[in-house]
Length: 267
Image (cartoon, rainbow, N blue to C red; front, top):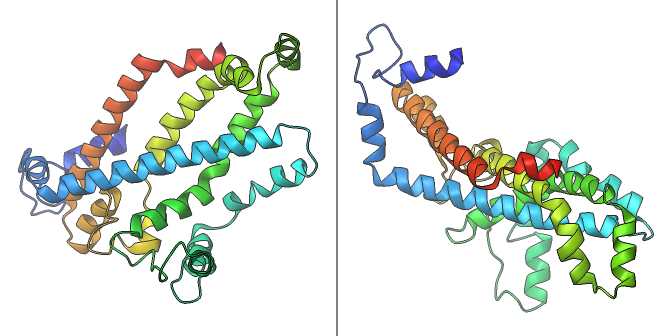
C-alpha cells in the first residue's frame, strides 16, 4: 500500500521536487477535461478488449482441439508455450518482419490471394496500426487462456460426454450443456485478469509503434510514460496512474458483484 499512497500524494503536487507546489486535484481535473484523455482511454479499452477476447477465443479453440485424441496434440501443446518464452523485443521484431509492407510474408500472401490491392504498413498505418499491435499481442499472450482452459477441459468427467452421446446429444449440445458450464468460471477469471493486464500493458505497444502514428495506438500507460519522462510532469503522470487505478478498481468490483467468478470455478 505504501507505494500507492506515495503515488497518490505525488499526484497532488505540481512536481515531486523540493520546489513542488501543492495543487490539490488540479492534475486530475486537467487530465479529465482534456479531449486527449478520452481518446487515449478509448484506445486502451479497444486494445484491452480486442486482445482479451481474441486471446480467449484462440485459446479456447486450440484447447478444444488439443483435448481431443488426435495425433500431434502433445506437439501442439508444447508449441503453445513458445510465445511466452520468447522475449517481447524478439516478438516485436518477428511480427514487424511478418507484417512489413515490402518483405512481409503476410502482405505477400494477402496480395497474392487478391485480398489486398497493395501491401499495408500495419505498424505505420493510421487505420491498421492498432490491428497490428493487437495481432502481435494475441500471438504473444494467447497461450495464457489456452493452458487454463485446457486444464479445465481435462478435469471434466468423460462419462458426462458418454451419457450425452447415448442420449443422442449433438456436438453443439454437448458443448452447450457440459463443456461451457464447466469452463464458465475460468472464462470469467480470464476475462477479468487478462483484461486488467492488457489495459495496463506498455512494452508491446511502445516497442511496436511508440504510441503512433499520430497517437492512434497511444494508450493510458503510454501517456503516463510520456508525461513522466518526456514532459517531466510527474504530478500529471501519477494523477493519470491514479485514475487508471480507480477505473480498474471500479470495473473489478462491479465484475465480481455481477459474475462472482470465484464461485463459478468452484462449482
